[in-house]
Length: 147
Length: 142
Image 1 (cartoon, chains in turn yellow, purple):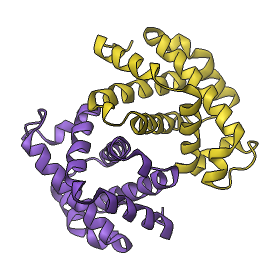
Image 2 (cartoon, one colour; image 1 turned 180 degrees about the horizontal axis):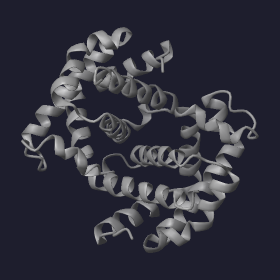
Image 3 (spheres, chains in turn yellow, brown; image 1 turned 30 degrees about the horizontal axis):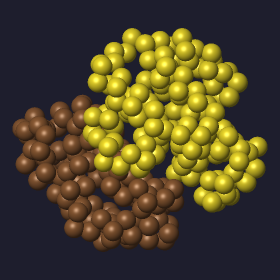
Image 4 (cartoon, chains in turn blue, yellow; image 1 turned 180 degrees about the vertical axis):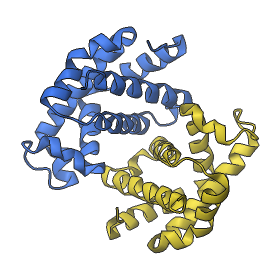
């Protein structure tokens, strides 16, 4: 089980409290599709993904980004129980969605950058370290049921 | 992975904006890398890695200077970084995975210090550039 110090928990909840899940989620997913265009392979039915502008404005991208980040919020509420929190989602991503777990790591890195841009200097090295740990742990939990 | 003319232009714009602060960006990126990925500290047992370390600042300056040199010779990264590539292959032998980690931290530094500069397109270009630099630096490893 992953151990979270009191400081880490504080850094997670204080950042999360100031995040717009809708905006941040939309931005993170859009950037994933723009910075790593091969990730678009999972979204062929999302309509127009032909340019960064199209991706950023795409309502399905925005909605799905919000969905993904809302789920991330569940992780934050269950930091001491991530394995079971994400058990079903892990099975889903393996059996139905067929998503390479590497994509979870890519999205995690993008999320950290989106947060960094949002919080500026307040996104201290300690803050970054905590959040990189969190995205890594979430990625691991999502990959756990793969077979 | 090839840098398009747009990528090159985006990267030059970023470094043009960063200007003389590149050294600070370099030091900041290293500090973040050591904090976020403690395994990277294993390459610096001879350094004081405490907060505000003069050695980390000095090394950040070196790393930044190399990136600036790469940007100024963006059409020939292999040529511009050839000596550094030799150094990393023969002497330093930093595992290739670590270049991605430093790259991530550099992107975070740009994001924290210059969020408006890091549009999605610029983010993509800068990420590609940093990957390309890492590739060149590890090209002669075997």
